[in-house]
Length: 280
Image (cartoon, rainbow, N blue to C red; front, side, top):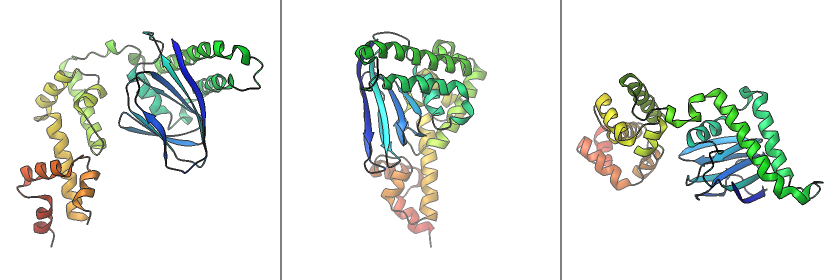
């Protein structure tokens, strides 16, 4: 494990403004020590108040937005150099989801936050061990990651090893997973969704996921997603005065032209003409 960067950032600026993020090929630990933030990570939103610890896998897009007048956070960029000490993507998703609702998690998670505070306290100029701080920090990071992994393995043992979740399950298991992803699509249809993301949500090989979805639902995942979005469009067209562009944005389409083309294919007319004909 190689420590690329560790830093603390104070954000006393305007509430709601993006403070950072992006995508990079390194693992990242993000610790919110004061304030409240919104983390957007792999098409999900996590609102969390300090203390909160986020684990970000390499090459995963993320954006941090402050939600309180003052926010302080620390970040660590790590090159794991092939090590498996950092929780896998499935574990990171589970862990990050816990940051919005920490109260039920008990003392176990509190000790993890204490360890995180200790890591950044090594940078304190008043730290009596500041001369060896950069030697201590990697050791503390390893301890932090071990605590997180132990905590997660106790709650969801199968996520410790994704190979224990077969990408080609039996018929009953596949049906259960497809219904799970359907519920996920129905709750998140307005967000950017890809076939790869949907397949990974239920730990399925992409090709197997598409075949299984079509066999169970009678249409492809993309067709089902379009159906959800177009049904939502009909509701907005018939009950609101929202513009076509606003409806396009609201239901998750990136292009008004693409939305209009799909709408016309299904209903035979453009969204504007449908509204004119159906709303007196």
